[in-house]
Length: 461
Image (spheres, rainbow, N blue to C red):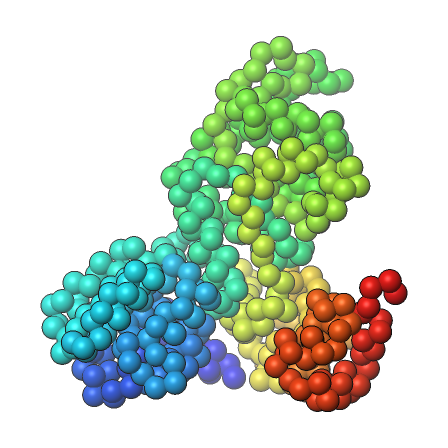
């Protein structure tokens, strides 16, 4: 397991030196081999798939910058692959290969979002020119960029968040980062700052739930001498400290209502008035806010201003919990182990394969922050270089082996799917069966197997 992870990390490091990643898709092995040779000679990292379904399996792991696919293939053709890529990885460029007789289809595909097409036999220089053009406009973050270096991931869900972050970083639009505690909202805010035109200016963060109201007011907006008891000098607030840069308002849902009013005024007027001052100071500060709370629920309860919500939530990026990106756990663990060894100047420890499996299977209610703390604890308590499964099990307690089995996950999905159908149809079994494309008898058997009573879904109950 550890060797596999090390090879994966080495592969990632090697591809960082490449000009970009390209996924080739064609049911002709000879053409795949020829195109691979040509592109690798130009220092592109290349993987090949002989079908669209194989390509869809490679995409989440390889995360290419460009897909080059044949138009005519069995089962799923190039158009079907294009549509699936547009659904799952919007912004990823797709270049189509087409025989002379299918050029009209390729032209139509480019009108549907394909980057372009090349005719077979593929001219080498035309291929390289098209690839270079596609690389310049690909919507996916490039591996050579350092803006997202702190975010360790191979998860498609997290990659989509990074893509959204990269796109919004080019503007001054305000961003609301939502997600459970420990999912990396501050890291994402820093990444947005580093990818923006403000990257050389200050990045400042403050936790709105970590201090008393008067102190939070002073920290954010500043105060004049004598504004508070014992204040012997004036104090610049964080809006001024971050002028020209980015200010992260973490846990914005905990900001007191009085300060919400003051914050709204700053956002509207682009100037801040320190406590005790009659003069406003112009500021050019980009605001990124973050919360683990449901702001819609807080608005309903009257604890958060609706007008402020819409000022802050121009673009919302929802960060996934770690249990939805389990493929990142081994990568994060490797990163933390290297980090801890470098900080302490000691030999780097490793996890036994069974221990890694336990880490991957855990639910991680505290997300990446909890994983980091668990790794630190394991390193500190392990007497040997190899961290055992028992040590992990003791650290996780009841969370160990929390990942459901395949049959349990399948049953849970089926139960939720059936419940959704019954809710949509108001308990009408015939209509629900038609939506599920199952006959009525089989559908009743499924309901019985999962102990679902259609009567409970009918209106009036």
